[in-house]
Structures are given as C-alpha cells and as structure tokens.
Length: 390
View (spheres, rainbow, N blue to C red):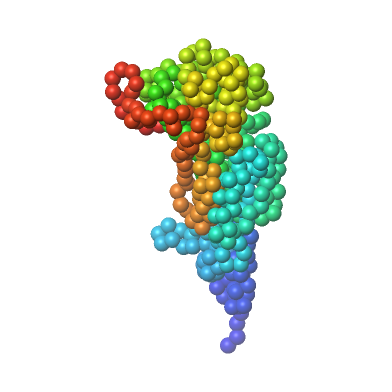
C-alpha cells in the first residue's frame, strides 16, 4: 500500500532533521558570540526556543546538546542551560585588553604584575595608554573589542566630561568581562569588579605611625584633583578623629605645585603648629623638604614627613618615608580576578582592597626615636580604634 507521509518535523527524513538541528546550533553559536546570550546568562527553556525558531522541541534539544558537547553551554539540574565563558585553553589563549592612563609613572609595576599573571596562565595582553583622556580611553576600549579581546583590565579616568557614575555604568555594559585596576565603584549600584589599594587605610596608617613617633599636630598635604587624594584624606581624618588630635590641611592643583606653593604650604603648617605632615604624593613631599631647607628647618627634626605613592621617594634629598601601594600585587590580583571571571562567569562579583605598607626611610625620624606602642586615644578617655570607614 502506498501513501504520503504527514508534513511534520517528526516525520521529516533523518538527513533533513539533522540539517535542522545543526542550523539551529549554528544560529545559537552566533547569538552567543554576538552577546545576545552573554557568559553566565541563561538560555530560554527548550519550548520557548522551539517557538522562537519554528523548530520542534527535539530539534532544540539536539542543538543544545551539541553546544553542551562543545562546552559553550552547560545544563544545570533544576535550573536551566547557561552560557559558559570562552576558556583560555582548547584552541587559543585568552586575549586580554589592558588600558592604563600612563606607562611612565605609577603603573609600570602594576603592568609587570599583570604580565606575569597572564603569562603564567597562557593568556596574551594588548596594552593601550589613555593619557588620562576619557574619549581616547573609550576609543582604545572599542579598538580592543574589535581586536577580539575576551576581557579587559581598565584603570579608567574618572575625571572628564562624564561623571564617574555615568562612566562606570558605561563600563559595566561592555560585552566582555572587565576588572577595574586601582579604581573602584562610587556606589553600591556599581557592578564592575575591581582591585585597588585601600588608600583610606594608607592615610589612616600614616597618621598613626607619626603619632607613635610622638607627633600631636599633623598636617595633610594634597595634590588635587586625584582619585587617590580623597580616600587618603578620609583615612587621615578618621585617624585624627579617633585619636582626638587637631589637624591642618593644604591643597593645591598639580599645575600649581611649585617651590612657591611649597613655601605657602610650609608657612601654613608652621602657623598651625604642625610638627609632621602626610603628603600626597612624593613630589609634594620633596618640594616641602626643599622649602624647609630654604627656611632653615630640618627634616625630620623640625618637620617629619610621610609621602604617599613611593615612586620617587627614595631619591629625594632626604629619603622619604612613604606609604607604598602594593602595585605589583595589585596587577597580579586584577589579572587573576579577570581570568577567574572568564573561567567561572557565575561567581559572585568581587571588590578587592589591598592595604598598603609604610616604607620607613629618613624623613619621619623613626630611626632616631623609640617608637611608642600603637595609640588608642591621645586625649580624653580610652577608646578602641573603629573599623575604617569607606
């Protein structure tokens, strides 16, 4: 007896059905590559995919099974099918885009740490320098994405036409994972991962170091604007509040810092009765040292100094005690965090703060003094130091 088969997908010849599921698998691959289904995202359930693509559920199931075998997606019992991040192994190494504002100051040791961590993982890096320019920076990001970067390590410029909040939101919307380096979000709504120095702790520890050397009136000297100056100031002011100490502050923009500005700063410190100062950054502390010499004062005898950054502190005319951000560790940690994100996109987002150390040299006078025990409160009743704010 002869007859015609019913026109249904289930009754289609095997080779046609095979073509359909492979065509659907190819379409899903393209959508994953284009970011329609980003790493860590969940695919629609199979009946929804079937309706969206005009296919049977069995065709969808076979197409998804092919993607599972290729490790593009994974099925999680009772939860759904999730897109996996491309792995650095199997076929090619991960390509990581790195954007920093400068390759001459502060960041060389950070970049060294990044390079070591990526090399150990078999990943490759492409470096771009923004020159502290937001437009140039985002152009570099676009170029890196066009070049096929799997992830980005960014030290973004948060001063410019866009507010920090708007700029960080733009970075959070990038189609590949990104980790901020020596920057962090400005609000609880920020979702970009970050690794940065705990600058508040650096300012806090600098004050307590000087208090242990016997100083009771400490000045804060800042170069502004800077993403570092504000948190250093917060840590400084928390420490003097906890210890019940008076303080004084001097600020000037980078382009204003000169021997004349240093003379004004020194006059203000002396007028307030300060015997020590925390200076952000190294150059400001070096200028203040020269100003003290011009006025016949000695560092550290008449004015003890702690610089912040430790870039050129050791070559100042009086080698500067300095708060030293852990730059090399910072780079390694940021690279490791990004590689983990590529490998495990489902992991919780992290904000990592690394506490800086103090490198003691001549400018604070520690070598000449017996350092007192860690202070609780200098004036008034005893109180325990609180956890750092911020």
